Structure formats: C-alpha cells, structure tokens
Length: 223
Image (cartoon, helix red, strand yellow):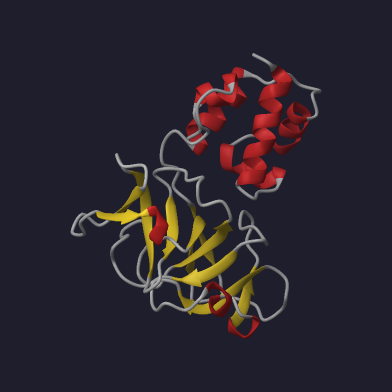
C-alpha cells in the first residue's frame, strides 16, 4: 500500500464531502486525533482505517488502496440529523424558504438572500451547503414530505456519482431523485425510493443544475 497516495485520496474524500476532519472521523467511527496522525504521516494507514472508510462511506476499496476505478462504488446514503430548530443569527448553514421540489424558479431566485429564514448549526452539516424543504412522497421513507435537505451545487455536470441522491433542476420543474447510469451515455435514469413511482429516463442535456444531497434534516418543532 502506497501510504502517501492513500493519504491524498482520503484528503480528497474529506474535501469532496465538504467535511471537517472531526466530522469525517465521526462519520467513519474513528478517533479524530488518530485520523490527524494518519493524515500527517505520523501513523501508517492501517487496514482498520481503510475498512472503516469503505464500510461507513461506501467507498471502493480498490480505489482507496490502489487508485483504480471510481471512489463511490455503491450508493452512500446522506446522513440524517435532527435539528432542534433554527436561529435567526448568521451562525450556521442558511435555511431557505423554498420547496426544492416545487416550481421552476431559477437557481438565483431559489437562493436569493431575502429567502433566508434562519440558520441551523449542527455538526456534520457544511457551512457551504444550503438547506431547503422537500415535499411529496416519492423518496419515502429515506426523505419524508416536510423534511429538509442540505445540498451543494455540482459545477461539473459530467461528473456524477451514480446511485447518489441529487436535486435535479430542469426547465419546468425540480426533483429529488437517485441518479442511475443509463445504457445510453447521453441519458440518465431518475429513480425514486418509493416503489410506487416508476423510473424516469432523461437526456443529460435536459439537466440545468445538479445539487448533491449531503444531509437529510428533520427539524423538531417541539423544542
């Protein structure tokens, strides 16, 4: 195992998932101080650390150890968190008064400053994300109607992690779906979690914006 190469791939994962080292350590179930020592080269990358990353994040072991293939070899469910409400202060991730699955407003209108209704400060939710509301039952029970999701924009639409959950923005509407690979490289498959909904085939060229779903958030209104 090339220790330095694996370190660089782990750092890539931390950056790609928009996590701090302590949040990454929590996600894979390891001590943050030991993770820091691994990344600084003071401790060698162990089989135990590799297996924790593979099992908890759904990462391809072949990619992580050897650098071959793609990192996300299987679906990695977004983390689910419970927030005890929103604050009006600027500290935390902004929450927008927008239903991301309804309407066809442009990205600029969706994320306009005057749509911010509060902020949520929860470990594991990146400050670079944006939090929006979801309605409908197509993604139940993974995402329920009324839940919120933390999303981040994907700039390069040619890079898709198949099997992951995205917000797909089209000309006429927006949807939250799994993106699956199509036999025709010019198309994608949109898949719901709810088996009552059929798959949808969509030309890649129809996608205007993509947002990766990092977190699923339930806001406890009892607090």
